Image (cartoon, rainbow, N blue to C red):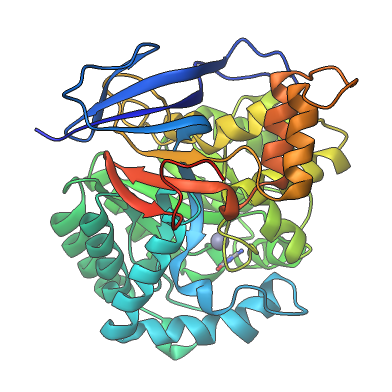
Length: 445
Ligand code: GUN
Ligand code: ZN
């Protein structure tokens, strides 16, 4: 039996915080507590130290959170992150499609998958819903690399049979064969799960969308991932391609693609009927603020999502997004919501990146909580790194006289807004140390 005890300030959630409720009762903060881990799972959480027979790591004065869950990110797009000067459709043609063609090569696919998953772990992200490319080998490589690291991964080869260069197109019969093979090989194997991965309505023929719907019908428990309502030119093109559909989202609905395991990125350009449909079907939106700002796509309306009752998770959407850091992503989410007149709390943002995502993916028995029975997928963070953030944190703690101590929310918000991978001390997946800042264990920075 493998055992580990971790001590630190534990932060997680027991419910859904109000979007702008800084005093939410759904926040659970347990300073100076011990997490006891056995064979990859949390077995107890307690204030007292465990017996001498427990190997331990003391992170006194540091935060411990459930590992972040990135619900929409593109493995092959590390090649094009931070590419200048375009909006979505140009960006795909100019940068992204050429880069994705490299992943036909198994050596590129395997090296790319390893680089990508290690980069997630180096940001405190321990689980992800990932787009590979159209090439089956790019998804196989990701599943293999995730299994080696013990990570929870949801992915599947991308479906695209039109409006893309020749090296990036499949066909309905070949794609169906590849998907069936990946479902048989990977779905439910360890922590891997298969997602029917429709790039977006523009790059799949109606026949391919119908095939995607058949796969979901044939195999219970599959995920579905795609993009929707990201950019106004995209929405116009979808309307031309599918004149019979009520809306862009309705294209997916008509083909049987919306269910409680569907993850749709962006959802900026939706109407009330679309949001109600998301609620009815149980599908949810992955909000990608750095991407939406970088590509000039628009401002996601989180308040409207809450009003119509559909789920929202957080995602980096690299390479349209500009960082794999979930902290940076949450900081940008706050700014996008500020432009919409909503004061997003750190609690709502952090919830959406942990328990909220786990619930939306029906994985909350395993992910998103620091509780006995959950997998020990965790990240340990410094509250502040560098002179400015440390001073700001001291102010929040009431250590700068005569300023009074601020609320826990004020402290967490300053951490979320200023933090990044420099704050990350260590990432654990199923209780195994998978990333560590050099020289960081034991001594506070
Ligand atoms: N829509 C279709 N493909 C993509 C992609 O790769 N990135 C983003 N942001 N939107 C898309
Ligand atoms: Zn995307």
